[in-house]
Image (cartoon, rainbow, N blue to C red):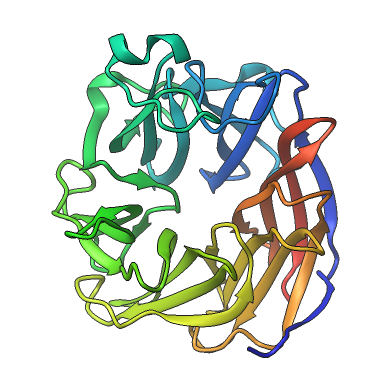
Length: 352
């Protein structure tokens, strides 16, 4: 595969949002509400003394907001949801104060209580854990509170990751990854809702091939009405992104093909007002950092240049989330390590 050139992202301005020496803070997702208000959700859990763990009995989703388009954040009035195992939450704003989104939920128990909790303890680097599935959660007051009677199962045994999209025909498409088929291949999958999340379809496989690798962390974007692009992380030695397409609103998919974009973390997609697509991602191979690529042809090609949003100290970074502001500036949030743990940072930059 051809090697892409790199250069600094134009007009990049760095901001530090949250680092806590006692908290593992990661996986931010940011959306715009009304006016200059942004909402950001991310996972937080106590720092384990020996190693970073993706599971913890006190893992929660923390929700914060900015009233000035990401320049400052109201950390003192943070809210929470998904107590007891919240892993990641990807929100979506429907207007009128209605914030909805996909929650990746985990059931977690103390190590010595695996048997009584009925949870498998198969990974000594994690707590006893089970993935019950992905859930659709709702807030009717701009994300200030999250009522338990407003939670709907999306799909059992699945892991939500990338942001859901609302298509031109009014359908919600929620990307997840889960084991599929007789050979239990880790696959990129979507669930569809035609009633704004009250009910969900059976799983639709986007990409699955155990001989190729484990497809996971899918990202979706509607390029044109009915035309959906999917990009996937694939867990194997090289860890290039793969992509494929649907021309019928996500009901059927082409065979996935590899790109020349090396990452190791999940891809995230943004469609700009001028129609171009922006891919942001964490590069978990030296030189580490947060990067972006731009497509001017609906994802057919991604140019010959990657833009460096910021350098990273090591491989533990990525899971980006971006929005386009009114002046054409892009705000990209991500997580990375610093001060002995992980935290949330942001970059304001301009697409060339």
